[in-house]
Length: 373
Image (tube, rainbow, N blue to C red; front, top):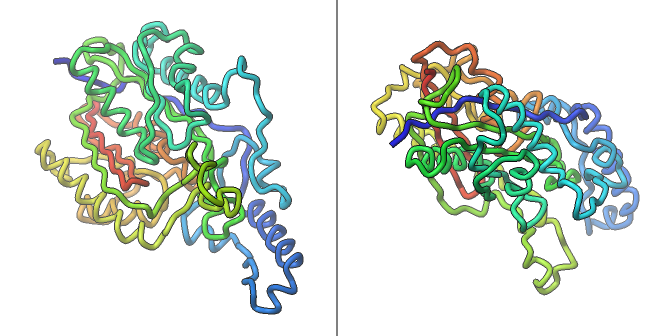
């Protein structure tokens, strides 16, 4: 048995930014347009008018101030309200692969590992641009990696579930060096015309190098344990599967083909699941919450993270103990906890312990307990 360690992480951040102010202007222009086009129906009480959004509402509901996206012009066009990506030929690299390769190269450089040494690539993300061939295999080829690759989708928990799969294979000896990469184009599955969720997501890609401890060339984090949990719920969903077109009436209302969420139920049901999961995992490893230096939580909502941090630590987290990045990146699905880990882990001293935790649709929860080596 081998000890798996994290030796490098990388983050690809898109160049384009949408601030809350820009988003509100676009959404309200869309709302005014819809209301004007349906003035008679609204006056007759047959249709509810589309309400305006505002910056205070967004910040209070989420803690988000801006988000990075792969295409800004389409999202902010009231007549479009979604990203616009040019169609690519089959012999061109996919957009997820382009994002992933950037993050992977940064992670590999930090680990001091060449792409040719990698013998496992897991592309773990919420939404894949195609069903097959696997995005991971395309990433593997683009990097020049060996071995094999496969895709995973556990929604916002994809990264931690992918880390568990890779760590288990490292531990067993079936692979030596792995890349878990999370290219998230969340802007493409978000319904930007829905006031209750139009502000939630952003785009990003993260990558994590995992290898045997004996092969680590520098600073690293020992993976002390991983733990995953799923419990079915339809409160967060996207029904846009390949069978969708076969459903009777499928060409009608398509709203459920984008991100859907019953936010109140999610908040009420997920928080106790996540807190119990983390505390149970720590207990299994005989680690006290008092011994934790840092929590790198899924970046979906500041209030949720504050609640979980307080439940796990038994007190309000001190400055730096539970870093948030969603104010800048928004919710980036599976990548959020890895962004937080990548940006807020270098200052830990040898022996410091922390938890990477993600949670979301499924419901799913994944935790990775690490210790600075």
